[in-house]
Length: 108
Image (cartoon, rainbow, N blue to C red; front, side, top):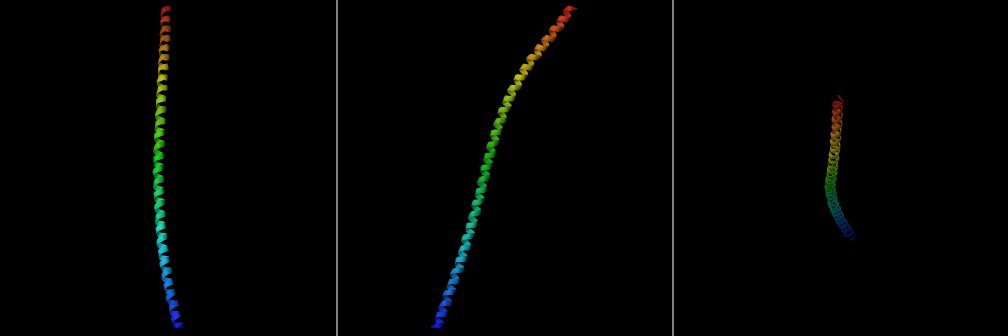
């Protein structure tokens, strides 16, 4: 009976070893799948972050372009105003010079 008990103990130990080995293998598979899943989530998050960054960048550039156009339009208006004022002053100066020349000629 003692030999049978020893055999049963060894059989139970062998079964326990198989169970432990199987559990380790299953745990390794679960850990590997979890790592793969985490890596996939990281990659998707990075991809989404790049996509959002590009969209923000595009929006910022569009806004900057609008502001540049507004500044250009305002600058062009101011330039035109300066041209008109300058033209008027040039005409006034020309008339003044002509009137002085005419006066000098009249005095001769």
